[in-house]
Image 1 (cartoon, helix red, strand yellow):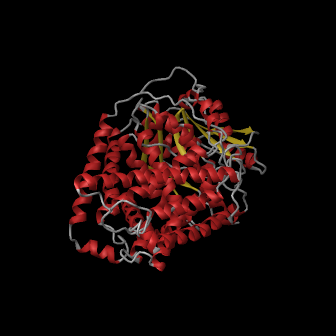
Image 2: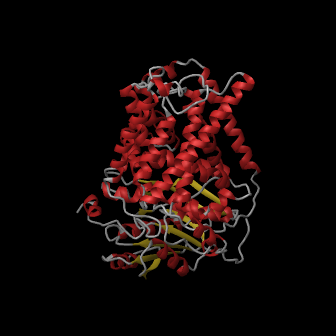
Image 3: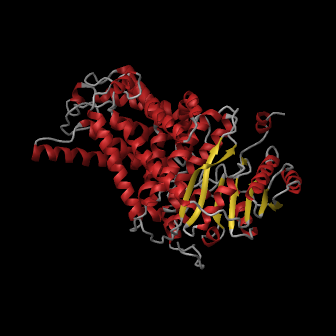
Length: 610
């Protein structure tokens, strides 16, 4: 039986797929119905705003009443309102909750747009000029993303807010790096936008820029490229001593008979290369197959590592992790997913970082095994997200979470924080985030690479991504202290809000493509007709540039050959994000969440301060 055939035979749905308290099932017809309603509502608004009588009040072919100069590529306010209406109509929750949620979205967004228009009108009256229609549309779009993510966080049935313990550390160097790299990236973007380069003309003609200035596309690669170089230099300069303390590897396993033997064999090989005491704890989490038997036999066959199988009857990965944490008797705790095959040098590279008392979490970069339907697209995805962005964020203490596929902690930290949170998605991000706020560094070493399984079927990929994409809201809700607190934290004041807004942007990507096609076909705005290059640039231009950039930096030029699959996968991923947001149930229990906040759940135990 081939690997693909084996994985197809496994039912990957578990209690973690949709936690009962915070998520519901989403029928596959719901997202298409929402997109259909979106097209109808958007078409109606475009027709209405272009009627002569209405256009006299709104001459910019969008719901703007201020005297803006210039043109826009997309009627962003019509787009955002159309999305709000179509999403709220099919969101989770009762009809009343959906109606109230939609009204809150629309009124909040329009209030923000009204302020933007009034400010522009004020500038015209006092100074004789404003900030232009294109700028207003960009701000309106960002406002639309922000309002959506914040309101979904407020109205969604979310984990209760907790007290996040924050221990101040010296953020000066991180802030200096942030401001300098931002300034350099801005300068490059502005300079390039004014330059007349043949390369820019070529990229524009081939739909890589879509009529948008090159500065917009160059900013992110230049900004994150600088941070990436700084982070890699930090990793190389650490040069940790080759120590070999005892470590425990906990592996939550639920119906993993198809791979558990290979997982244990890979860990044994890594233990041999490491040369220290390695103890494997397979947490058999309510499996209904022969996972426990196969794991026991595989552990008995190990030559370098020792271990045992521990039964965890309560379903849920976090239950297995917490039981494994309780069974851990070593200073260092390694968490490994059951479908992850460690690289031979993973332990040897990761463990020595803990000779630095300021290091609290260490991770690496997952690599797909290859051969599966989504593996080629996944390769570029991990190069961009884990091999580039996550590494870069380490330069400014901005790493929010390190995925639980392979991550190393000091065992005392999860214990001090009360263990891995149960009953929600994102327990790995939650624990890494909170360890970081205790003042400890999170290190992502791009040289630490391990093989992590990739879903081979659409249904499994859908289940995985809906779970992953929902987790940012669960973690943000639980750790709202970081966002609303009066202390400065790059994770809380910059990264968490950015991740929420980015999630909203991704949820709106498919509707945005539909909207672009609609505006292009109908040509409602003759003053600024939408060119086909602009439509393609939404999912072709910037993603291609970033993917190529990240692949080359990670020393995997072969990944460029995967670009077509990756670009298609980004659309599928965006569609899954939309479905994931629909799985969040709307409710009016925000007062219950805030009441839970007054309970200080963080245990006060001694811990070394970084």
